[in-house]
Length: 280
Ligand code: ATR
Image (cartoon, rainbow, N blue to C red):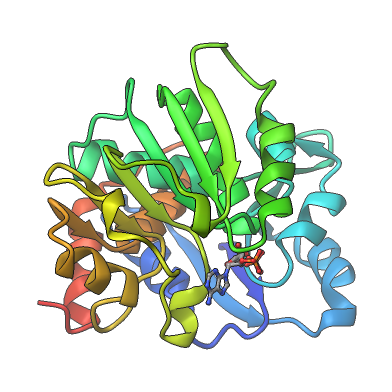
């Protein structure tokens, strides 16, 4: 019987995951089926359990269920444990449901492999302190960031993340929290937008002094046209202004690796998606 995979979310109609995993499977000669399934709020846990009986081999989980997937997983990777959210589920040989979070690894892979950005000893400003921000902090620190400033509209949420991640890993990095009115002086190597402001056409209210000619800006969002944060970055002479399409494909590739034991070639898939979005 064909191996089945799916992404569960609500809503799910805009998901690119079936397209991405379909391209991975074709590229790697893997016979599998991957569908997007809209799940009613009250049915999530029951639907996951039912799907992960044979022949359901693995699931991606997206908004609004990532925290519930974390709670449901019997065994979690360290990065998922700290992220407080799970986007990849599968059943191990003993029958236990395992959970991982590949979002942060996807971001780091896009930054370092696709865009050739060096994270070692970098100074990073992370905008936002919600689920999206939380999922990428440990992978950014593991990639060698020497300073991470978490800035959020609501200061207490950024401070909470500092208390969670401050003690994690080596002592070679500094983590601090602030709101947008008290951002430190510039010279950031990288500014990452992990807020959802762009979904409503907005961008956090940021002072211009953050930027210098070398600062790279990365928006975890993407779209058919330039995101509001990428526009802000370009207008303020960022050295590069990058969207999150590569992160989307890279996190999917990490899931594919977990399930199938093979890492797909992401570059042609990113290229195909950019074309399908009309970006090129
Ligand atoms: P996600 O899972 O996408 O991270 P979330 O957990 O609801 O979603 O978090 C949304 C993040 O975007 C938060 O950091 C939020 O700031 P607050 O914690 O102050 O709410 C941030 N955000 C959303 N809209 C914003 C806006 N217009 N300006 C600045 N920050 C915004």
